[in-house]
Amino acid sequence: MTSPAITSAKPPGAAKFASRFDRFQVSLLVVAVLLTCGALAYGGFLLTVMQLAMIYAIFCIGLNFFMGYTGQASFGQNAFACIGGYGSAILCVQYGWDPLPALIASMVVAGLFALVIGYPTLRLRGHYLAMATFSLGLITYDISIHWTSVTQGYMGYAGIPPLGIGSFTIESEHWKLVALAVLVAFGFWLSLRMRDSRFGRGLRAISGSENGAAALGVRVSRYKLIAFVIAALYASAAGSLFAYTIGFISPEVFGPQMAVMTFTMLFVGGVGTIVGPIIGAIVTSLLQEVVRGSGHFQDIAYAVVLLVTLIYAPKGLSALGTLFRRKKGEA
Amino acid sequence: MSLLKVKGLTKRFGGLAANNDISLEVPQGSLFAVIGPNGAGKTTFFNMVSGFLSSTAGSIEFDGRDVTKVPQYDIAAMGLVRTFQLVQLFKGMSVAENVEVGCHLATRGGVAASLFRPSWFRKQEVEVRERAHELLEFVGLSAQAELDSELLPYGQQRLLEVARALAAKPKLLLLDEPAAGLNTQETEGLAHIIQKINAQGTTVLLIEHDVALVTRIAHRIAVLDFGKKIAEGTPDEIKAHPEVIAAYLGVEEVENA
Image (cartoon, each protein chain N blue to C red):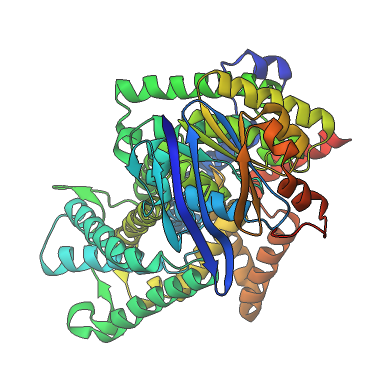
């Protein structure tokens, strides 16, 4: 696959094995772009599916910072998507804000919330952290149901305006997908910059060995907290974008189901890989539509896919390239 | 001048005194070794000095500052960097990236710098790569730079840990049983590297099980047994010390051990 002549010609440190971009991951991205173009060409229901895939991709890019690079467990990021979604809905519908400032304001709130919640919670490790974060998602879900004066309970919010700036709004479903894809690309680009830096290396060192990282001067708890806040910011943006794209939100959208689904996406795509979040979001979203035909067996089909991935491709689809290469090298 | 001064350091786990009243001074520029049989309390001593474990009593002074209660990353930032007996490599990162993480303390910049990439940041990234490359060459791992660190054989993992610690530009390098699990040839290579590090001006505090290695390369040796310091001196003095011989050979007739 990789020609040794090209690899060795690169400057020291420029080419890294699977931890950086390899050709397989790049080709996966190309497929993702082609799929998006296909959806734009065919239109119809595929457009909506891809729109949602893009929104979840943004969510997962953030989640990957916390779960992938830093190696911590969180099943409660849907709480921050909830803040983003409701923040945008309330600000736009009740107070007539423009979508973009509402999105940013919600992100700020979600970020602060993550900071306050994360500070005590991130002292927990492993299963305990997973439980605590899961409860966080459940709590916000309950609040979104019962605090009816603010959230309108099960009724949710309808009539949320589409994304746009000033008088320019994106009404067409085609352009919505294009805008979302551009935002995914932007979020992805930001995540790459953060990853390939002193900060990003510190995060990944924590997932490799907390003790080792601390011995080299990485402030482990601070870095974990920052990763948690980054994940919350992405989640909040995804929540807001959901509101703008679909125009309607209700508590179910940001319920525990969302945590499970994004978790599946991240693992199918490849937790801790560069393109994993995007690939996982798209593949899982499309898959959902495929298995939807199986009616009540939908969840089972879903679980089977997750299990098969975890067993045969534990590092997800994005790492398959490395898997093949290693097999080839051994042979 | 002493770079590290330990006075009356004690650690009790319940009723067990893993370290009991240990005092020693590591002179600037020296290659100092702490030896002792298994379970003598060497690693406990190390963990306290590096801030991984709090002490029950006693004080630790590093570079003229009391660091007894200072958290580990601050101790590391002051220039006291350790390695681990069980290698703590960063899995999922390449060999070179592992060393790049080692440059953490010698560099600066957080999220904002990584997003906006000012010119000093870009320059620093290039320097980090170059430094990682130099250090890998120093320990002889250049050829493996792009490999997943997990795939390295054990002996090379240890060398990688040393290179990573050096990237932090330590004043005092603490090596916790670096030769454990290495074959004779690998141990030889490691001994050579430790001597080179010391010759370049880094003070080294070495914990070792392998007495032959230590008596050959260390300037000064302290011996622990059952949590107590039973002897300290030059390699020749230690080799001739009756209590040390008793501790290692388990001579039962020796009284007052």
